Amino acid sequence: MTDNQNAALYFVDRHLAEGRGDNTAFREAAGARRTLTYQELKARSDQVAGAFVRAEIRPEERVACIVLDQIEYPELFWGAMKAHVVPIALNTLLATPVYDFILNDSRAACLVVSHELLDVVLPAARQAPYLRKIIVIGGEAPEGTLSYDTFMAGAEPVPAAHVSEDECAFWLYSSGSTGEPKGVRHVHGALKATSDTYGAQVLGIREEDTVFSVAKIFFAYGLGNAMTFPMSVGATTILFNGRPTPDVAVRVIAEERPTIFFGVPTLYAATVAHLENTSVPDANMRLCVSAGEALPTEIGTRWTALWGVDILDGVGSTEMLHIFLSNAPGDVVYGTSGLPVPGYDLRCVNEAGEEIKTGEVGELLVRGASAAEGYWNKRSKSRATFEGEWTRTGDKYEITEEGRYVYCGRTDDMFKVSGIWLSPFEVEQALIEHPGVLEAAVVPQRDGDDLEKPKAFVVLKEGADRDAVLPELKDFVKERVGLWKYPRWIEAVDDLPKTATGKIQRFRLREGAEA
Image (tube, rainbow, N blue to C red):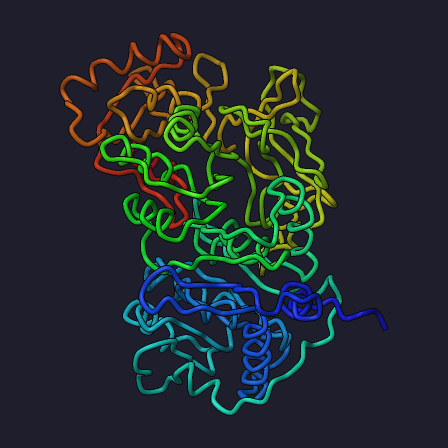
């Protein structure tokens, strides 16, 4: 029989044998500021495994985790894996009907939920036909549920179940930036594959690092940031369970002094605007990282000017678990997504499946060991996305002569103007270079001749004069990206529709433009 390849052994138990048991694995950034060492995490996750066994949650059954970023989350996640139970890290910001869909779609046998989320989650949980246990973290457990403390009390520790690296370890649900979320199944070996590639060879993460990720654990990007990478070397993660507004993010950076900060473009843009009206605190960051959507050049250069630290813009996906294309320390070119992460192969193809040439635009495909094994109960979608060893990303790219990848937009977001493909992202980047624009999104709208032309939705900066800014934007874009690419219509809005992970939902703007 092969060695036990349960991922929890590598990311949790190994550190005790290698002398890092007393290292702080997690500490909370607010409230009680609880901490958890690797030795304590090992003991607690063994006990969680025993509690699942005692509760008769069987191997390979699913546990829906609608949990804030708090100390109990790593206990639960790794403890479930030790019991060979499959945790599903779920978005904590969804509406009741979406939870109803996911609990039914996943057929979860058990739900673990933070008390703060009960009002939204419990109505869906009460009618979920497959749920046998509902466990509540914090606060009082309502009738028909069990508190986390009671669930754990007296449970006998259980060692990690013996599994292969190819067995299903956990699920994520896609963010729904293009519609209904999909269950994405990942195997035990995928976690180490991301830490051996991006974690070790791009971040160069080390034991003395402290990381802070505004992207939450339920997000594939946040899961890698907060657990996979720091736990691969025995480093420390700061957990923050609140909403990461710019002022809060800056305060946590100043008080907790992380060495690596993980953000998303929306948060970077808002924080830059915030800091330009205040002051930049003393910090200890050696690296900053962005993913989720492409980082606009303007935001990257302004952040670097403020903090003196570059942002490593990278590209990943729920299907590939984390970043596979990235800028790297000492090799940052804003406006590009960088180069393939060592360990991943990339190619760009046109509609005929042929490799594109320099200057052409094609869909990005990626090959690597962290790829998901498929979508749950969506065979046709799995076959369309996972083509043998290759995964279709749905992202459009061009490749420069230097081999760097330049983001052009999602496949569904690209459209033709005068017979030429237009990248919404290119126009959006030009718009946010204007000093009065905070965010922008571009979608197609049909003109009087029934031809598609660009329409822009912009969020103006606080204090910007709407009547002065809007008339300037068309010529502003023409000067930067070309006469034919400028938005024919520009609408100022209070905010843009986004997923909980910060991705702009352009399909919702398209629906409005078509109405």
